[in-house]
Length: 156
Image (cartoon, rainbow, N blue to C red; front, side, top):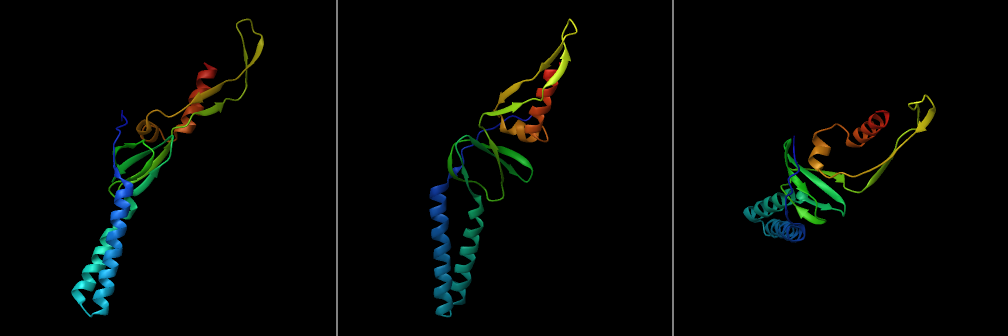
């Protein structure tokens, strides 16, 4: 079974400022090179701006009571739970999972008790995700999984 691995990515504010400065600097170098007919400066500035721009998709936010599971080319790399702006490898996929408490109400079932008296039963299940890796990678749809398991437990 896959277990959640908590990771601490890079500070997103610092990386966002750095990437923005590099993109703007590269574009300014391109402008100066194009205006002064300096091909090397223009190509270098444009290349720098494009490479820095490729790092921007690595920025992401984590809201309170949310976790982001990080995968790199299909391999689970960890989960970020701390709220804020973060930066990771831009090729990583970031899947959000709500960690809030949720409610599920089962349908009412008509059953017979030990003395064959008809009884209607139902349940309200209060639940939350505690392991994002298991919720995402061990079942197809964890919300539906809770519903099916709740109905099954009620019938038993």
